[in-house]
Length: 134
Image (cartoon, rainbow, N blue to C red):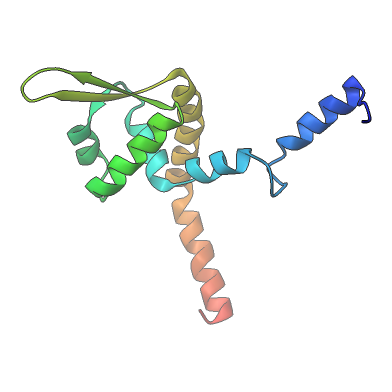
């Protein structure tokens, strides 16, 4: 059995989380957070806890199935907390965790960038399509 130096162990640990490598565990997280519904849910929760129905109203076009799947996934990953308040009817609130707030700041920047640059992207697409016959 060969022994590894501390420097070699640190280097191997850094390589283990290189998302450019196919076996990197961080890829599963990148895959999860790159979903459009994840971004929209995180941003919808930016100003405080929301009920499921509130999120459904805020996020136009999301189906109940997708909203439920997204919230469950975010809760599983520790990005969103779910609080059930016993009442009639039962009240369920969703809120960002500390980890979710960290990610939400990045998602807010991406959302703002998309809203501010969509016209330029449309022009680029039209130019490309005209040039390529698409």
